[in-house]
Image 1 (tube, one colour):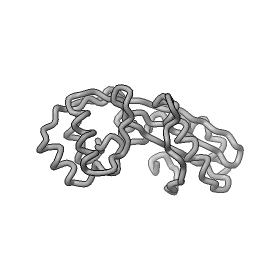
Image 2 (tube, rainbow, N blue to C red; image 1 turned 90 degrees about the horizontal axis):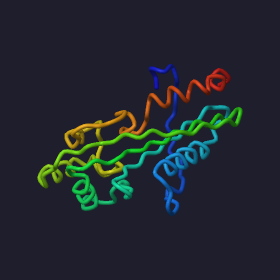
Image 3 (cartoon, rainbow, N blue to C red; image 1 turned 45 degrees about the horizontal axis):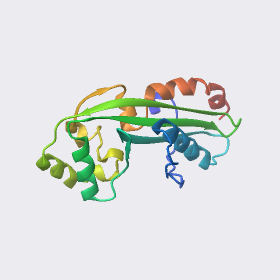
Image 4 (spheres, rainbow, N blue to C red; image 1 turned 180 degrees about the horizontal axis):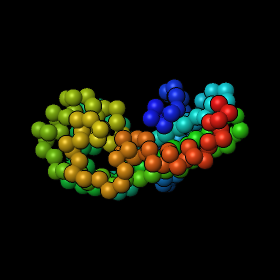
Amino acid sequence: MADEGLEFQVIAPDIDEKRISHESPRDYVCRLAEAKARAINNGDSLVIGADTVVVLGDEFLNKPASELEAKLILEKLSGRTHVVFTGLSLVCAGCGRTNTAFDSTKVHFNVLTETAILKYIKSGEPLDKAGAYGIQGMGSFLVKEITGELDTVIGFPIKLFRKMIEEHRQCLQRV
């Protein structure tokens, strides 16, 4: 965001991230992004919340709790297409204005060998990522192609953010 001329501070709010029964991926990431932004009381600042989920069919693939779970997730994704949803929420503490939106990108995985999956898991990278992979890191070898924005898969859709921030220019001038 430095290239946007903005200074920021990263704060990890403690919110309940459980999915509501039958909640769509779009609604889920938007609800969590807004909850994260609202959980931060930072004076007159503009607060940005974001959340990302990986969805294969109807299944939400969260961060794996173990290496075994990471292996199972990566085996499911092997050779298949899934969708990554990232929600963004901008909350202006000064004026109370909120803007929440999402973007989605289709990700087509290569067919993965067990050896490749295990080597990747040993790197440690998949253990703190939704869907058990980081496209911006070592996990890039997993991906055959994407349809949509790479930044959405990374977890912060820049094009969407630029559009949303324009709607909050007046808030930024007060901060």
